[in-house]
Image 1 (spheres, rainbow, N blue to C red):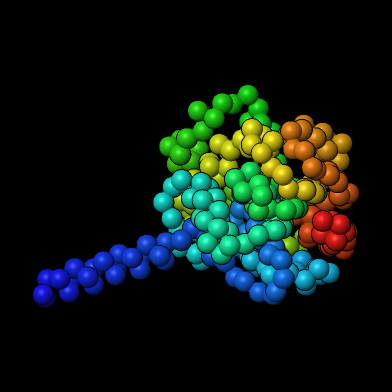
Image 2: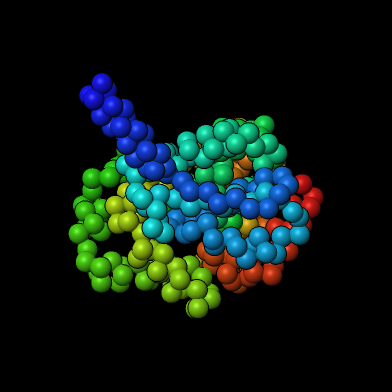
Length: 279
């Protein structure tokens, strides 16, 4: 009997540890039709707080944050696929229907993946400066087979001191927004990230090519694109990569970089509210 009790306690401990290793954390507020808020790489769900404050349409808000970022416990790789599966399971478990998704960057990739997997559940989505295949823009001609966790570049990133890593990502943060006051916030999110999650998670994103699932998406979609490096160049990339997405509207936002909600907040809220009102 004593051994049986010990075994039972051990099983409970294993179950508890497994439950705590979730790839996502979700904060829920409000009432109405569900709106899933998906932030970008290293960003917390709270990045959408100001957007929620400016929404004209009431809803049940589901703010998602990811493992390995913002103090959340890291998970084993593959990182992105695990997050995607848990988000799909979350929607099913909560029996959410007529779901709208508001997403940014990597969050937009997750939105597309979810909408392709649950085409009759996701009604509409807003993709903020998100592209289906980053690799095609950043590493043209490089096949996915060459993108590996075990690479000299990744090892160099893992071996960097805190100061070296800060210098490496500082330039990136400066090129993501025109709002100088927000640069320090973006940089801090990067520095707070679990280093392996940052390095290997980014590798996951470079492997992604969602162009082949766009034809499975039924959701009405608004794609908001930043005008960086030029509006014409960026618009061409969006039109090319989203060519097979049926119910889409692509709108470019002038004088904006990657974080459109920081650079053009009023225009951003206006476009979001207009889209949701017409959904």
